[in-house]
Length: 186
Image (cartoon, rainbow, N blue to C red):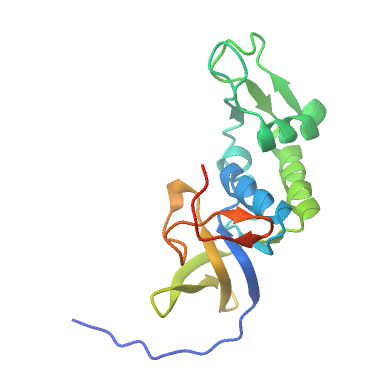
C-alpha cells in the first residue's frame, strides 16, 4: 500500500551553514566548534533545555581520564572551568573512570551561555522531523512544534551518533576558516 503526500511549500524558519540535531554534550561541542570557526549554526533540541542526558536525565558524571591522567580537554575542560563550584572532580581524580560530578541545573545555564557566546541559534522544545531532499542531497529539515512544522535549511547536517538520522550533503566535510572544504581532516 502506498500513500501519496502532496508537495508542500512552507516558509523557511531558519537558514544556516551547519544544522545540529540534538543539544547534548556532543551536539553542543559540534555547534560551538563550528560557530567559533565562522559558520552560522542552528542547534535543534527536543527538550526544554540543552544538555541532553547529562542535564535532563541526571547522567551527571564526566569521563575525562584514562585512569592515569586526564586525556580529554578542549570544550569539555572549558565546561568544567565555566561550571566552577557546580563541577567537582571525583575524590581520586584522575584514577577513577568517572572523573567529574556536576549539578545538572546550573550546567544547563553553563551550556546555554557557551552556545550563546559562540553565536549559536538554539531552538528548544521541538522535534527534528524528516529531511527534505534537494537533488541528490539533503537541503532542509522539517522541525515540528505544537503549532506547525517548519523547514530549516542547512549546508551541513550533524547529529550525535546515538541519534544519527541524516548525512551531510557532502559525504565528508571539514570546516576550516569559516568555510566548508568538502574534504576530511584528521
